Image (cartoon, rainbow over all chains, first blue to last red; front, side):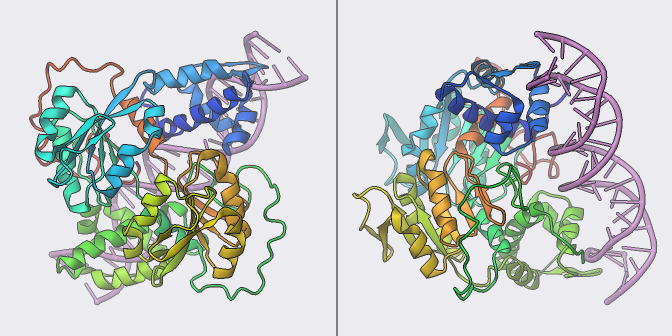
Length: 238
Length: 238
DNA sequence: AGGTGTGAACGTATTCACAGCG
DNA sequence: CGCTGTGAATACGTTCACACCT
């Protein structure tokens, strides 16, 4: 069991561990070794053992980890043993898609407030939540004790949305806008940026379209080596 | 100018550099020092200089970088000086949101083929593109020479979607499904995973809702220190 | 002077390899 | 014996600091 600050990169892997462990549990598996779990995750066994060792000693020597127990532990570490209210700013196409997405709810996040600038959107109702004008962000967020915000507004409105959320007491932000947000210390943020993901992937593609000649689909579709075979970054690094 | 393989993490930063440089260009700025650019980006000047040095010597001593020229160079490095056709698999709520998203188009990506399993979706038309049955993925992707795929299907269908895309010649995948894809060597992938982003953010929040007493909003909303002040990970690390 | 490009130093993350426990 | 937990070794990424160029 380590002490001191835990690296953020370790924290970011924990949700994936939980997700995988849940699938194992659902498949009726109640014990895994770090080696088995590593295979499912596409990482090394040493990494899993080291990551978990930051928080405690959850394994049994010679046996492995109890799946259900490990799920509970990580769930507790991440504070996922409760439902979190979230404020969504932006109810354009993207915001509406997010508001209707059932996945968040299943994983313990509830969109408890929605804000937009456009009068046409204000007053609409999603899952019992009314879209409010954006000038109410600070007060509503503070009064409802919301600590998590999702930003789904155009780039030029994102910084202001962040400022208002933070003024209302939000301390964690999921940002879908393609801008770099300036955040005060103590505020945590993750970015969702599909466009730059695509724009970095093209680096690895041939500049010109290949004149569909020698396209050998053999050897490919079959099974294949462990995690990180031929220099494609594994699931996590990406 | 370095040689050999360039770290993927450097590649992933380049699109953000371009985005920021474009904003500067639009603001009529035609020259920046690494220091100025670093301020805009929330990273260190040394990192920018080092990153760029992997590809060439684009700066002028005592002057900085020519904005327009640097945009061109990075655009060329990333192969963004053309339009890329993309295959979208999945036309449920998420897939439809992606299909309608104008942002990709603006940045040089064209959704040129759409596939789904659900007969109700097949035959629908978006921007002149017909939704095709998923068993046609491999052949259509191969015949149209598409190298980039977007996966927006449920978790349990994602691996098969990936396999079919790859069988058709796709070499880069943007995966929205919450599963770890097994990919053969030579295939590149990025994940879009809002749920686990949220689930890792909650680690940093108090487990119990704070009884809204001392919520000092002072000192906050104002301006603040350089990039990475008080231990919130900067824009990039996140 | 002003700012790049880069060796060297540093810090962080991953992997090795094994002592020790059940 | 099998597998964890962890020091030690290694690999990787970032930052420092300065020679050098314009």
